[in-house]
Image 1 (cartoon, rainbow, N blue to C red):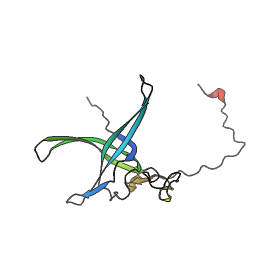
Image 2: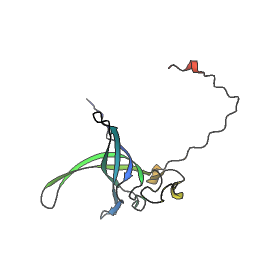
Image 3: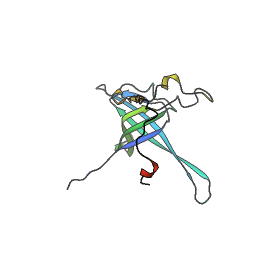
Image 4: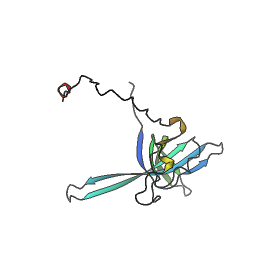
Amino acid sequence: MASRSVNKVILVGNLGKDAETKFTPSGVAKTTFSVATGRRWKDQQTGDWKEETDWSNVVLWKSENLAPYLTKGKQVYVEGRLSSRSYEDKDGVKKYITEVVALDVILLGGRGGAEGGAGAGPSDEYSSGPVSMPRSAQQQRPKAAAPQEASFDPGISDDDVPF
């Protein structure tokens, strides 16, 4: 009997610290960083709003050195898979780690952090839209739709909608 499974993670959050890129002895790049994601909910008993932040460790393999672009506070989109492994530390204690192995990392907007001051708009560096890392996954801007004539009638009215 064949079974199917899915291991997919999508994160949209802010970088907790600057990314670090190191290279293996064979020259393969390994970039690591952490992403903060949060959620907000209303406590049923007190009526107070509560917030919770989750931190995810992310590893990106075989990509160019992205550390200069992935700096603390920037908002990113990360898509990848969840990976768990264990190792023994220098004292012989077994440690467990769970991390996201990224396939795509996309910078989402502005500089983030405290740069730019209050009321500052997005930086010119990011005004052209999201930038994807690695380049094989770059998003193309949608082309503007051709203007339609004012007399265009698709023949659909509110009575045609089933709900």
